[in-house]
Image (cartoon, rainbow, N blue to C red; front, top):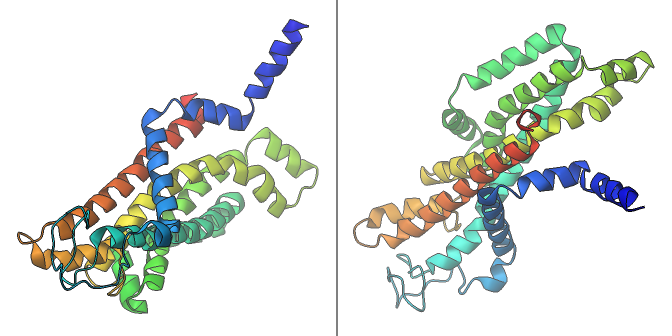
Amino acid sequence: MSTTVEISAASAIRTPLGEFWRRFRRQRVALVSGAVILTLIVGSVLAPLIAPFDPSAPDYDNLLAGPSALHLAGTDAYGRDILSRIIWGGRVSLSVGFLSVALGGAVGVILGLISGFLGGWVDSLLMRLMDVLLAFPGIILAIGVVALLGPGLDNVIYSIAVFSVPVFARLVRGSALSLKQTLYVQAARSIGVKPLLLMLRHILPGAMPGVIVYASLRLGTSILTAASLSFIGLGARPPSPEWGAMLADGRSYLGVADHLTVFPGLAIFVTVLAFNLLGDGLRDALDQKLR
């Protein structure tokens, strides 16, 4: 009886989700990074409740005030509280990151599945198109798209999504080329399973671990790119409390009020680092070759 119970308990633990958690919880740095990201998300959602001041309300009695008990991160040239603006700016930066990666990932996954599964001239045509997009550095391609569409956060999302598509497409294409040769896919094809169902039910799940890992890494890159575009005036417009725009506003006061750039810069640094470390942990937990 005891042996049967032990076997049942072992089999319950060895579910795919349980196996993933068993491996992921060993990644202490990734766990801490996940906690940091969760804190940032919760803080951004609850910004109206936890921000100590209105991010757009000026205070002309505290212009360029340094960090103090009242303003923990100081104030800007209009007396606006920097900490409040960083908390509210998390909404903007995280939204841009998640939406751009979701959009670029969705398009890239679809194109990669079609390309890898169908092969032939369809594969050649789609991959040459991806090669054209990959020929441009990401930030240059994003600047070009924003220049065509015009500045603004919506267009920043589209521009970042565009240069996210090729890597997602190539990643899924490689998985599809490998998975469509497996026995279970060949068996499903032999009994007449439709191509669309084959791609969605049998090939896509096998490609998802790589997509999840790359998406987590891409989130950090997307947030950094959005901040860069806002810094050069192509992203968020004043008085939006976006981190890159805050850096742009503070560069005129370097040496006079360094806190205007230090705290937004730290917010970008910590967020991007957390997503990158989380991606490394997810890779170690999901990569079959490391098991």
